[in-house]
Structures are given as C-alpha cells and as structure tokens.
View (cartoon, rainbow, N blue to C red):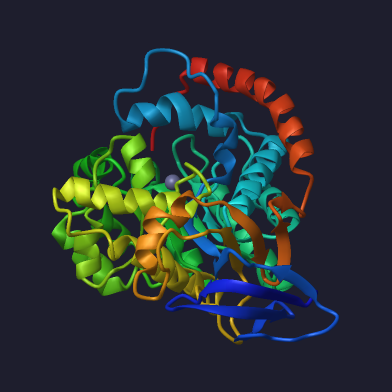
Length: 446
Ligand SMILES: [Zn+2]
C-alpha cells in the first residue's frame, strides 16, 4: 500500500480547521502536523483545497442507476405505492447480473467523484437474488469503496426466504474471508411486503451474525396503515415483537412513526437514517428527525439512491428542516451532525473501526475539495462554509483506506468514459425489459 503525503491543505479534522499536512501509511493516517517531511512518498499538493474526512452514505441503492433518463409508461404515479408499482418494482424485476454490475460500478464512480468513501447499500433484484451480493461486491472491490451490502428480502412475489438465504450465504462467505472493505447486513424491503416468517428468520439471522437489519420503515403512511390493519400493531411494534431492533439495525426513513414507536427506537438503540431528498421527491412527508435527535436517537443521513453526493443531502436536510417546521432557527447544527458525526458512528457500528476524523491511527478516508473561501475559514465558522460553499465545490482527490481512487479529478480505479459507454449502450435494452415488466402489471401479495 502506498505512502501518501498531502501537503499544504486546510484540514478539517472532524472538529477543527487548521493548515496542516497529512501523512498516510498502510491505509491509516500516520501523522497530521505542519511541514511533515517524508521521502519516497506520493505527494499530493492540497494548496487552495480543503481536506476532509471521506463522506459516508448511510442508505444507498446502487441498483437504481439506469432509471436515469428512463421513461415510465402510463399516467404518472399519484402516491408512493404507485411509484413502487410503476417504477421500482418492475425495475428490480428486470435487473440481471450484468445490469446490476454496471449500475453499481457507475454509482460507485459517482461516490468517488463526490468524495463518498463508505456506503451502506440496500439491494433488490427479484429475478436475480442468488449471487447478487457477489456481483455487487465485485463492483465495490473494483471501485475501492467500503460497502455494507444487503439484499432486501420481500414476500411480494413469494421469494422472501430466498432473499434470507442469499443474505445468509453471503454472511457466511464474508465471515470466512474476513474482507477488509465489505460487510453484510440482513436486509428487508419493508414491513408491508414481508410476512412474519421472513421477518423472524431475518431477525434471527442478524442476531446470529451480530450484523443488524437494514429495512425501510414508514416511508409512506400506507406502511403503517397496512400494519395496523393486518397485525393490529404499528410497524415498529411488529419489528420489536419479532426481535428485529438493536444497535446495528438501520431503520430507513421513519417518516410516519408515532411517539410510542420513537420510544421503541430509543429503547432498542436502533439507528434511523433520514433521506430528505428522496422524501421530497416521493412527496411522502417530513421525517421529524429533529424530534428523534432530541430524544437521543442516532439519526444519520442517506441518499436513498438519489445521488452519491452527500453534501447535497446535507443541504436538503438543512433546508427541509427549516421549511417543514417554518422555523429558521433549526437545521444548521442538526444537518451537519447527522452527516459528519452520526454517519461516522453508524459506520463504526457496522464496519468496526473509527470514522469521520483525520487523526493519527484513524482510517485514511479522505476527500480533498477545491475551495478558495471568500471570507476567513476557521473552526468556528466551518459549518457555514460547508453548507453554503463547499456544497457547491468539486472534489479533486478521493482516498479510501489509503488507496487513491481519484486524483486531479481523474478516477483511477477504472476507465470512467468506457464505463459510461458500456452502460449507455446497455440501458436501452434494459429499458425494453423494464417496459415489458411494467406492462405485465404483475400482481403482488404477502
Ligand atoms: Zn431506500
């Protein structure tokens, strides 16, 4: 592994801002100090740039890439269930092995481009479940992005237990291999598409491997309504009853959870991941993350596959908090806390190790961004520069686990242009498959 010396940068170490050099050795940060001198190292000049800890996305969908620019037949979806019926469910049914690999690698390239070095992915491909996690792993290894993978099991077409089996197979494999970058969680699509058998088997599996579940929760009100109607309890009461909650379990969205459900999250120590851009896109409502944070719940930030740019998600979290609460006093501290501190804590729980800090002994995940500030930049006003300046700046260099993935804005892990050509060539064929699936209006039940 190469030795890297980042010279002359303005370093945000996770807490403070200072001019410093950063020396990386064996995938870890070896020293942060002024005027470090080392010979025989790869020197990166960060003059006029800000050096930050690599960003973390706590909820992504690497499989969603080819939806970009795709037409959706029929009248536009009028609610979240229709978004699933018309777009995401036919799309995941149409995916095959090569579609998944190219979609993932392209999205991972965008992670590199935006300085996102760690992601927690949630995958679904109903026609190709067995082996899908290996396909994703291959793309993650090529890109060099640290990823927690999972297959979201669902009983909507009777394949819930097949999904659980795939998660178990992959967990077993990783346990044997002790992979440096890849982890696996136990995924579920959402409470309203899994029966008790699949839910219980998943909860038991997560306990067996101490890896946590990764599940969409109350994204739309319809998830809660279905639970109350069928099980006479709310979504989190059901998850709690079947043993699905815990310190490594990720509850995605939580837009419509009640106060009683929030108390269950708090008591179990489970993680909530907020996806403001996606919530706005699907018009499902505002998740009261300010209330959840006040209760002491660990709330992180995800993109839900909307993009791989986490500063964009930070900006959305900041804006929607103010807009939804009609209060210009909120969001300024909470949005950066979710991205910088809480996502680091989530990554630490899922991957082990310490994230979100540039300091001796920490993992060498770094984003170097172009930024010539218009006003003094210091520890006291860093968040202002982050939300209003860096958010619009370009990442120049991305380093993950001490490996340079992009330098001078050129991705080194693979040929970006060739990948774009390959996936662009494939997309129209995939869209045809999607159209066929969408036209079939395949019925589902749980
Ligand atoms: Zn999602």
